[in-house]
Image (cartoon, rainbow, N blue to C red; front, side, top):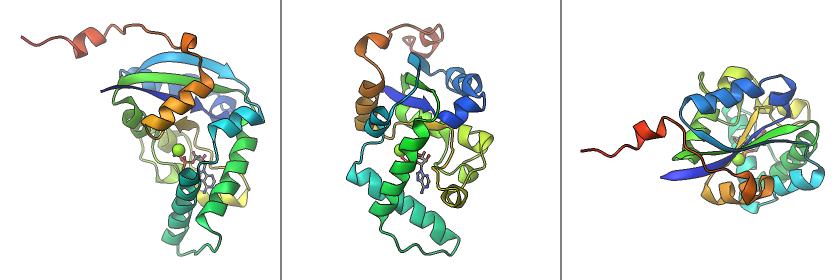
Amino acid sequence: MIERTLVIIKPDGVLRGLIGTIISRFEKCGLKIVGMKMAYPDEKLAGNHYVADEEWLVGVGTKQKAAYEKKGVKIDKSERDLGLQVREYLIEYLTMSPVIALCIQGHNAIAHVRKIVGTTSPQDANPGTIRGDFSFDTYQLADKSKRPIQNLIHASGNKKDADRETKIWFTDKEIHDWQRIDEALMYRKGK
Ligand SMILES: Nc1ncnc2c1ncn2[C@@H]1O[C@H](COP(=O)(O)OP(=O)(O)O)[C@@H](O)[C@H]1O
Ligand SMILES: [Mg+2]
């Protein structure tokens, strides 16, 4: 199924000069960039992007607790409170430098992009993924420095988020319909 998804190269990716390297990972596997811009988010934009959705807040806290428990550490704070703290860090972080927003289109693009990006904590992300290859950050290191995990990329988690997030960063006119040369190979009709 052809899908569109929203990717942000976050401030650590921009400030470390990794824009081109990161974009090429998506391009090389055949995904198509249909929208791209540099933006300097203000608090409103960052807060809209990381909206305080209950499910997301609890999900973030749950993942953090699980990562700590793996190391034998128990956290007393509720999952939701952990999520709210992370959201605060994220808004501060996303507004610290320009970012690159990409709308990426392709076959099963939402899941495929997440696979190329890797898991939330770069130390746990597989080699070959963007997060696994370009960062060594962990939940604990981020916590200690009172900042979000620096994992270079945001990528929409599902179709509903992809649609909502794409609308935040792009107008309809900024999304372009065009053909990659290799589409003729991938989608040719069999005999
Ligand atoms: N427990 C945490 N501590 C610090 N930062 C976090 C934590 N959980 C998530 N983050 C940051 O918030 C972002 C959004 O979280 P989430 O949606 O769960 O991850 P992902 O980006 O992998 O979809 C992460 O990419 C990461 O930068
Ligand atoms: Mg997410």
